[in-house]
Length: 236
Ligand SMILES: [Zn+2]
Image (tube, rainbow, N blue to C red; front, side, top):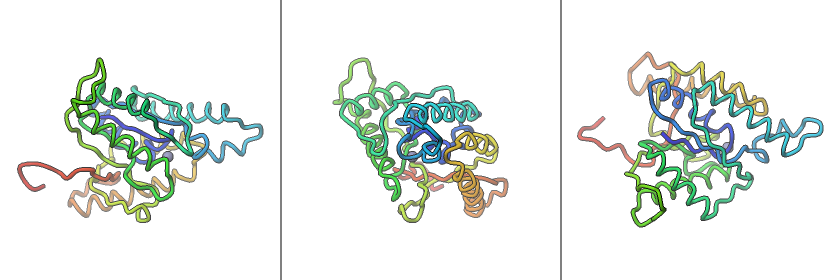
């Protein structure tokens, strides 16, 4: 599994339970954090006396490393890009294609196609989607890399779900990793207001997961957008 997060905490709020669950069950998971979210997602840290870009970055790096440790992530990569706005060049495209081809993922999780509140998330969606398609193309020649097979792609649930025209395609039961997710979320001091929000969201999605599946053991869940339809030999 490859997870690409625009900012330092996005992967925790939106997929932390799923990531921890996959790791617990033996999956290899790599997380790429494109930026520390210094300009766009660190407001509380800037209120500290004498705050600088370096001091904010150092706090954010510490927080996201602590969260990753709680979730069991060992494969973290930081690109340290500037955010607000995040700007992708052809060099970034090549770097991401190389990263995807190195991992050869069965699953990629990143931002969904539209987030009404965060243009960086939209840009990251376009970037990862474009690079995933390029990774599959034999014509995109990059020395030392091997073309990928079509992987399954999933989008994070955006913060303002309805305003972002988000439609859940998959509900993942995270009951077994819910406590890890909560502990990981608590690492982000500058965004403490989001902890309660995403705790409630896991409860709400757990309710939906139970109702849709009839499985009453699902207490907490995360939802994701499916970039592609489900394919198989039977309806399920
Ligand atoms: Zn973000």
